[in-house]
Length: 319
Image 1 (cartoon, rainbow, N blue to C red):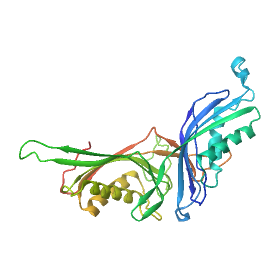
Image 2 (cartoon, helix red, strand yellow; image 1 turned 180 degrees about the vertical axis):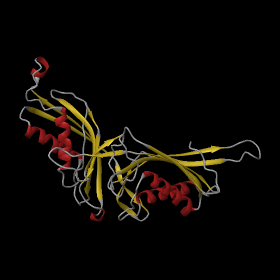
Image 3 (cartoon, rainbow, N blue to C red; image 1 turned 45 degrees about the vertical axis):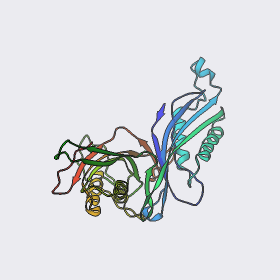
Image 4 (cartoon, rainbow, N blue to C red; image 1 turned 180 degrees about the horizontal axis):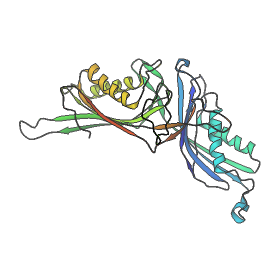
């Protein structure tokens, strides 16, 4: 059995703490569980910096379950559904950020203490690297960038002869970013096929692809790339204290293109593809959702694409 991931968010405190988890496929005497998790504790923008962790958790319980195999007798078995729900429940109970080792220990202790028939609990926690967004003004209080996912690329087209001048396109693919607050989505058409509720408080995450053409060849492409990427992040996250509200991915996309073109004065046209990375609110058993624990999902998702350009420039096509 495979369970979707989660995201857990907590207010940043000066200590080694805990975040959120998840679980996976069945193995072992009682079965195992796997999932990804992330989360944050309840707090408003004014509360100060948040921490975020994105974890995949595997649990396997061993116990004397021979009758389940030989006689179809499931008496006393700890179901994989119970294991999954336990991961989210323990994640929600964490008062502060916790190391993956400590989180695994807390889960194992819970299974041993709660279920007398369990003789051994095996828990593996894999933690994905989300770093706090570092902007020119400092670290962002609720913005995060996934480490190691972004790929810088460049494309050159050069024809033969005097009319075949070089055309250079620069870009970045897989720039994965997340705002843990200051995002909403409302006012859209709703009919009998619409289940999505309007909200002014949600996580906004995407794995951004963006390509652009310069107004003129820069003297240093490396420095120019850093300036464009930096402006993209500054616009996406907003000021390091408090951020900026995003009413939709579409609006944020347009503002990123607009700011790069108007503020940098070196870009003519920008193509964007921003897939929605959905984090669904999760209410662990015996508790309620408090903007803290989310299920991380990859499918289904929407892709938002657009090209933003100067009025007098022909927009360039996507790569």
